[in-house]
Image (cartoon, rainbow, N blue to C red; front, side, top):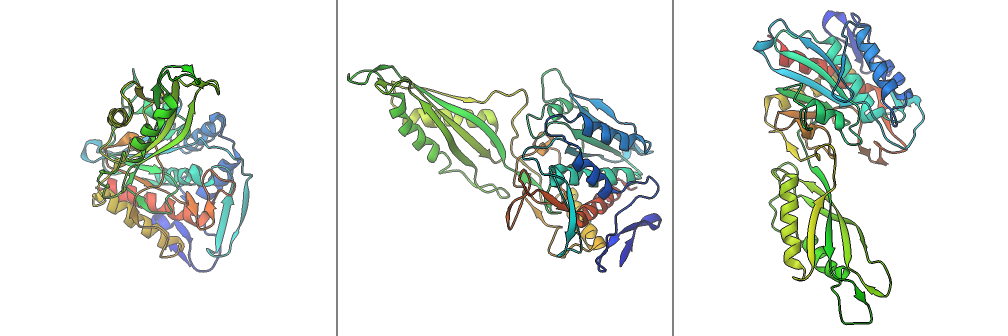
Length: 410
């Protein structure tokens, strides 16, 4: 069976086990074929070919995009009443990471559809296909619609930081009121994510011959520093959506010779934050905690890893916000339209990884898309078995179109 969309568009097949690609006939865009082509285009070292491909897709359908802010691709679709509604931004990224996963397409017996495998299939070319579909299909009656595609989310997010005015000498080019960020969420509306900071706790002492009772041992002081790290969140209140923050020591280095009292020791830490913690606030609090647990003659310094762009800080959108509810309802409607099982999609929950959604906060932001970071068998995104179900891409495409229609209709 197929569901008919507006203008007689076929939205997908539900029960007969056949492929029913979502298609916007007026603009001739098939998100599944787009995805199959996109996965074949390498974008792990250089995104130029992938950016050109997306640019051509938009240009051929009458939406000439601009390349701005260190490589971001931006296309706009205003309504006849831009001041009468919100500015909705659709955002995702086109860069991918190792390992290489060769393109493959195969039947998926449980869903009756097919699976596309390959690097970037779910992170985030599947979500990208759905966002482009929604953008092309949209007919906003009020407000504005912008598609903003960033080039380096998996690295330093320099493009997104420049696009949003978060780097020195830049300004916010979007000024969004609502943001939908495409990532693999299993068709759930994800409203929050922990932040990620990286830094180092540096302990300094005084070198001496190990045979002498002299010097100040920086490695010995690491015992107290690690205790401070271990107990750092002992009194932290869990966030209602994200739970407790997490601080993990990941590397330790120190000393120069086996017969010398070491003058230096460095502990690398990984921080997964929750609101309202900021990167500077974390640094100061950890500095105080380590200083209190180490001898007075040991120097303590805590430094965040230097970056040209801000760290991804934690973000949280109110789960009861109308945009969140609208996204979840559109997701469920899209899933039903193409025959995705009833227990898949339409939920409201946090996202499991840090993303550029952080940069949009506190603007109401939802992370949404087909595919999973991991499934019952193990990792999917950033893994050797990366895949996405085509039926979920279809469902996400329908969902994005319906969300836009519900948000920007008069």
